[in-house]
Amino acid sequence: MSQEEEKQLHEWVAGEDAFALRQAKKGAMIRVKENRARPVDWLAINLRVVGEDKDVYDGDLLDGLEIEIPVPYTVIEGLNLAEIQKLESDIENYLKLEKKGSNHEFWEAMMIICNDTKEQLRDGDKAHDSAMHAVSEDIENILRDKDYDDLVGLEDRIEILLSGDSAVDVEFWSELKKELLIRKTKEKLKRVHELVIRGRVKLLAQQQQSVAKGAISQIQSSPSDTSPSGAASIQYAPVMDEIPQSEVESISSHQRLDAMQSEEFMSQLTEEQHVIERVGFVPLKHNARSRQKIIEHGNMQGTENATALSEKLFEKEVAKGTNDNEEVFNDEEDLDAADENKEKLKKPKYFNRVQMGFDWNKYNQTHYNQDNPPPKVVQGYKFNIFYPELIDSAKAPTYKIVREGGRRRGQSYAGPGESDTCVIKFIAGPPYHDLAFRIVDREWDYSSRRENGFKSSFDKGILQLHFRFKKIFYRK
Image (cartoon, rainbow, N blue to C red):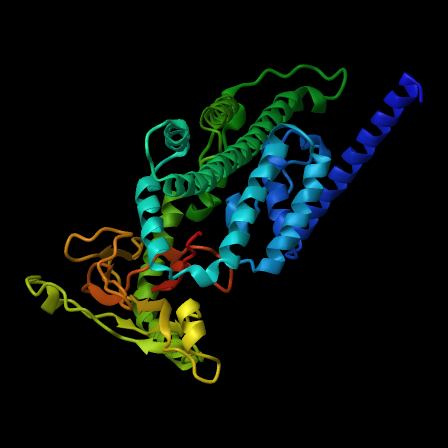
């Protein structure tokens, strides 16, 4: 094969790859918009705004900007082993099509996260090895709250330590280095996501600026475009804007509009364009009079209907009952009796559930079976607390975790076979006093996937906080 023929073949193959990549990414966007996306599709559209191949979307980058894009590595959370293996296969296809550059690095980073998650799932039965538990806690304490630059610096120090002549615990530091790589990869993917968010905001700002400039251009060109050719020039005089008094009096008060000279209108429009260019978006405007009427009307309606609506919603929630893996939870914790206003405040209604399940660790697999299962353990909670009459309804209730004895997050004082507990305190403000419940203290799973069930919202006077605990995996 001649050099020219080899060059043509290379160009043809590159063209085929570019076409396949274009089709793959367009297909990803279509599936996301039609609510039938695969995990890899969410990863592909992360690169839509910040990738090196924006042209694969034929310049239609504004389409789909309303879609909420997840942090890349959270797409994997909640997948089972078979689903992760399928995702790996899809990522490999993208790696073949995007052979270099930042896009290729993105897919390589996702492959690292996939491999790590697979390893955790396969080693799940080793989760309760006490020695590995201690090692895992030490590693977590070292890596906690470190950003990407901190992790890079720590990695360099570990390399020096392991390559030196001094006696060190090679197994521990190697394990730490392994976990550090995962944390560093996740921090890198977080940066990609931040670029995605900034890119989307920039595109929206450009769209709004374009609309504003187009409006000004159209208004400026209107007089010359609409004037008949050869027509005599008519000089403007302020009297032209005057309305006969008889017509003014015939207009009802609610129909009157504020008068504005054409020069004033153009000046205001130009100023608004400058605001858009300066801040990057169009500030939402409200009519103060209309807004006040809406607020007053809403307050009257709210006073009359809030309690009745809350009662109906409360009854509806109670009517749901509990699932097979749930129990009613009302383990209230006494709060500080020194609160003098507590007697004057109401106790909010609530209907909470605790989620229970079996933990098939290595010990339980050895000593129990399906016919004789181990005791159930707490796997999560669902809090539903009703606040229909909040004085400041614009301020959502909050919650905080209180740990006794100076214990910090991630620390454990519990003995073998026991669990640490903490108090979760809900704070809403008048006319309600605070509520507190004692719960198991484990790391929450913030994944939004349905089976994990994380939810934190305040709507129609109902605070809902639903969460499950993370499955804990300890490495070899």
